[in-house]
Each structure stands twice: as C-alpha cells, then as structure tokens.
Image (cartoon, rainbow, N blue to C red; front, side):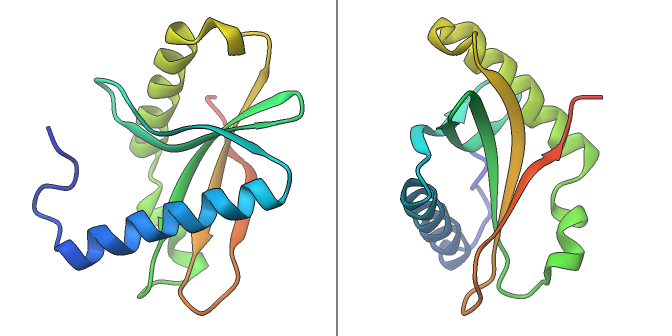
Length: 125
C-alpha cells in the first residue's frame, strides 16, 4: 500500500524535500547515508546512515504547521514499532551491518528554522 495515497501533492513534496535536506545535513556532519526510503511489510524508514560504530535509522518529520513540542503526535509508539520492525528487516537483508550498534533517531524540520536532530530518540523497549 502506498503510504502517500491520499496525501496532497504539496505535502508529499514538502516531505521529500525535507528528507533530501536532512540527508545533505547528515552528510555534512560526517554521517554516510546508506539507504533512503527503506521499505518492508511493516513500514518505511526515511534514512539509514552510518555514524561511526552506529547504524542510525532515522525518521524525518517536516512539519510546517507544528512545533517540536507536538512531535510525539507524529511519532507514536505504533509508528516507532513499525520503524523498529522495518529496521530488523533491513538488518536481515543487509548482513554487512549486523556488527554495528543501532539507534533510532528523529530529525525535525520546520521551514525557516534550523534542523533538530534527536539522536537515540527512542528504543525498542
């Protein structure tokens, strides 16, 4: 099922542009993006990046109308579980990363403001 079905084209474009900006910013910080929009039957992970010994699974939220204080509404526990299950699927398909420590990050973008990168924003437990 297409997760973008029913989303206005302008909202989809904002999301895609946000993910591109986040990937560029991560690369400038020294991370290496190894995958974008990685999908499984459980869901999708926007970006996957190597950061030293860590493999970071990153959800990017571009919210023009909401502040950082509302981020929990967009990254619910159910959404976190889908990201975690998709990360497990990715690791099963990409054994070369199995020796890395993993973490789950969230990048929040609000147009006209700086990017907020929440490292280890949530865990499996």
